[in-house]
Each structure stands twice: as C-alpha cells, then as structure tokens.
Length: 343
Image 1: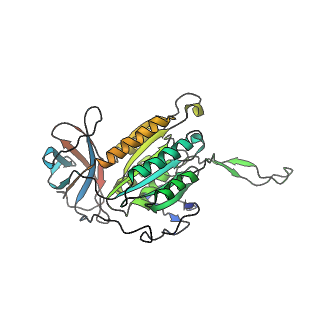
Image 2: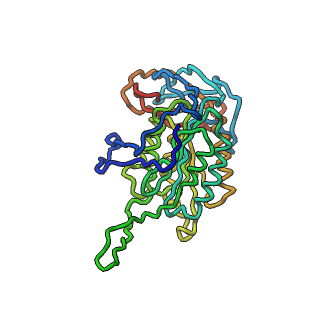
Image 3: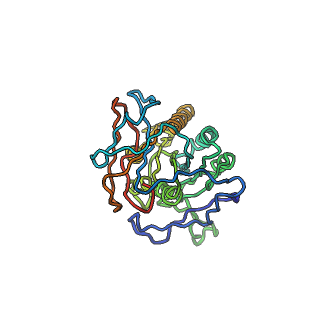
C-alpha cells in the first residue's frame, strides 16, 4: 500500500439530509489497494448470506472470561424464536480488522498524549501478521490518519499525528484589524456519532471476519449530523463490535466529572457487543482497559445459524444467546436481514 503521508479527510457533502440512508461520503484520496508489498492478502471467511454469525464473550458474575465451553452449552434465539446452531468454534483465529478512533477535541487536551502512548502499545500487543487496523481522529472533522495496514509502526505514527482541535477557525478580516483573521468558534465540536457511522459504513462494511472499533473519547458528541442510533445501526450492519474507553480530564469540566455522554456510549457498546470502560485520566486504568479488550478479542466464541425467518427484507432482528450455566453473554443485540451483505 502506498504510504499515507498526510491526513486523508472523510468529507461531508455541503448539503445533507438527516436520514442516515441519504448520506454519501467520499475520500479526498482514493483508498489504495490492500495487496501491495506489506499488504499480502489475508485469509477470509466466506459465509453464505443466509447464515448469521455472532462473535461473543462469556463471563462469570465478576466479569472473568469463561473458556472451553461447547456448542451444547448455548441456545440462540432470533426475535424470541429458537434457532438451530449450524457451526460453533471456541477459537479466535479469524483475522481481526480493528479501527482505533481517537477524540482530538479540546476536552482531550490533557489526556491525548496518554492515549497515543497506551494505544500504540496495545496495537503492538494485539495485532498479528494476518490482522489489519486503521486510525481515525475526530473533532470538528473526521480524519483518516492511516488506512488499513498491518504495519504497527505506521499505525503508531498515525496516532502521533492526532492533534487537539479546539474548534476555532479563521474568519474573514475585519476593517481596521490589521488584516488579521478573527477566530470564530465552530459550532461543531466533536463529531463522535458521525465518526462511528463513517468508520462502520466506509471502512468496515465490506470487510469480513472479526471487526471492532475502539473509541478513545469522553463520550460527549457536539455537532454531529447523525444521532447515536444512526451510529449503532451502521455498526450493526457492518457487524462491528464497539468499545468505548471513557478518557477525560476532570479538571477540564470544573471537577464535575464531565461524562455527559456516558449513557449514549453504553447504548452504542451494549447493542454492538462491546462495553464502556471508564478510565478517567489515569494511565494505569487505560492500560488495564486495553488489556481487558485484548483478552476479550482473543477469547471470542463464534456461533452461526440459518434463520428460520428466510425473508431478506432489511428488517431488524433481535438476537439472544443463552448459556445453560447462566453465565453472562456479551454479544450484539441484533442484525439487519439483508441479502447484500453478511449480517
């Protein structure tokens, strides 16, 4: 892949409707082919569109991961109706496609360097030679800092490119002001929901195998054209798990905590099979959170079934996996039944 030497911006059209389906997005640079030099073809899992597959974790009451379960330990339901399991594996050897998404808005000023350091170490720890990742930053814009690659050094360099954008832009010079532009506050401050939608829709939707997004953010969206439900729907259609690491400097919010978006982040993660981990501004907590995610991604079960409802009408189907030992299941809450993409 040709080396990305500058930010690749994901551009919103000038006029856009609020409905997610009406969005059209483009890249300032065309996405390079993924099979050059350091980008050898990766193994893929080819699944019939009539088969629903789920990646999930099993935990005890204290949150500990439960390994070594078998197909007979689980029951699966779609819209409340029992389904017949067609295949089951307790291994995580499928390729992983990972999106690292870093909030570079003003509220992250005092935690951004910590996120870069720990996030870079995590990528080195989790990625194997068959996995790929990309890096997106979001503030008043959504920027692709590094396209798909297995090169950890490129990914770490991309993280280091992230810079705080406080939302100020240059305005037109005023008469008598010496010809200098006047700072004008941009009303769009943290395009979090837009970033998740774009990451799912433009980056992950056509990928196969295991997919996950990890958001480093305080969870507060300001100015997105989309809503949290649009982001959830895009992630579900892309079959992507979403994790959110709530990173925030309490001092920035005057000591009141500042996690105003935590409720919406819980919706985003719980409905896609991930979770929220609150790390504040503590280095050790952030490292521990990344370690937990790494363990979960390496301990995923994979279950597949052919739905009794064969209509591929694009409707949303609720999913539930039950464990006969009453362990907790961490999985996405549903999928969209479409013939055009793997659910």
